Image (cartoon, rainbow, N blue to C red; front, side, top):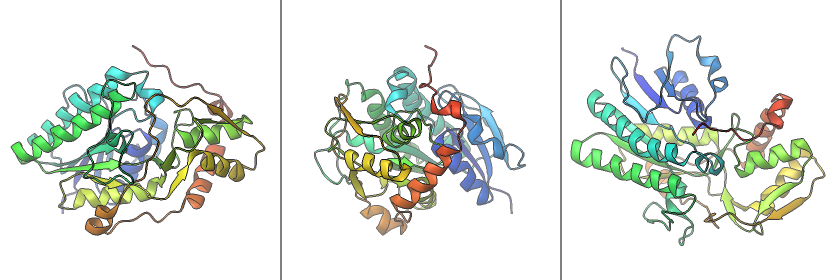
Length: 325
């Protein structure tokens, strides 16, 4: 039987690299693509010797050419943390719009099924809790986070248009907060920020009063949900995340307990449009995919902390990446 071929954009990023690993394990020929603006080749170094892995250093916002057949495309190229998309807003909008358009065009040309990575950020600062897929969101299109939120909302719209107009086989996953090995320590998100501060002996910074909530899903659980969604017949958006909700204040205290450090929590003003609540309703994933997260936060945090402890000392003190204009 001929080996199936999958293109994964954003392959050198946190989620993209774990997806590459999963599809390699499942016996696929994996084509990774990344422009490395936020990704790192160190995440996929271990794959380069494999005969069923190849890599294209390419920006998906420009025309994509992949020789040969393609069975599946997973579009995961995008900055994914506020610290990134506030510094590279135009690139964030382009990868969600032009990049998605190019990937969908490739899917149409290759008769491939495509899964696009959307986000819980399409719900904005939600007025419905927990968030289910029928909720349309509360998003500020011209706020500082709008470049990411609206890029992803457009991505969903054009994906569905290709499905209805061109009959492309499409899947849309709305990803909630995910964590695990290969996260960038300096990407500004709560979990790596807290662990990085603890490892450096700094106080942990909580924005606002810490009552805002997040729900953290371990990366292996998320990848399993994405894999099942890709192979399912479901075309509407689907939440994949862990509904175990926790306030950021309590989460910071969990990190202090985990790391055994003596730091205290310091409070700073809440950023503009920062969501107050974030919890997925995963009824659809449970019902349609038979999926639910299995790794509890205590177990997942231990694995993630052990990974961060192995990073070279210079990684701990590296400032957030500067991007060329």
